[in-house]
Image 1 (cartoon, rainbow, N blue to C red):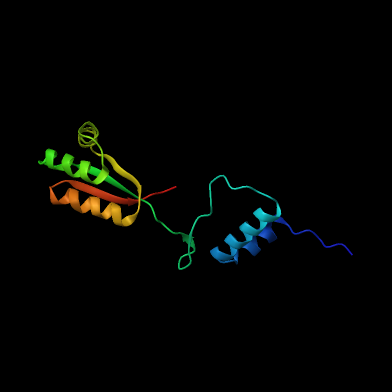
Image 2 (cartoon, one colour):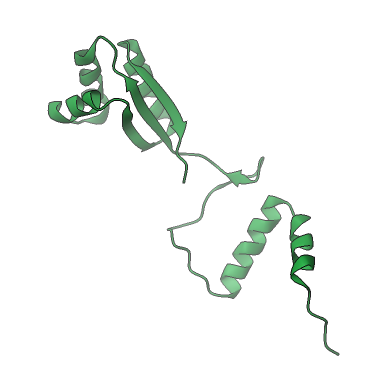
Length: 128
């Protein structure tokens, strides 16, 4: 007794009724069964409340160093461990990212330090 194959439309209809977590589990099962290797290391953490990848990396962008450019360079040197030349390049290159792929706590600490001396900064989630 042979089973009739499902049409593409039936498969799409079935998948559209699944939750994001169920789809993720199905993808992982198919990757394992078909021996598909991931192009990146490890797996993406899943935020179970939304079914979306959890954001754990942030980008701090120096929008405008403000009037106290030397103080901003000093704060960048302290926070990033960079030299004077690198700190000056970051300040002169504004607007530009000054910290990339940082944990939220480190990113917020840098943001607070830069704002204390009058710089305008932005904190954004790292988008893959």
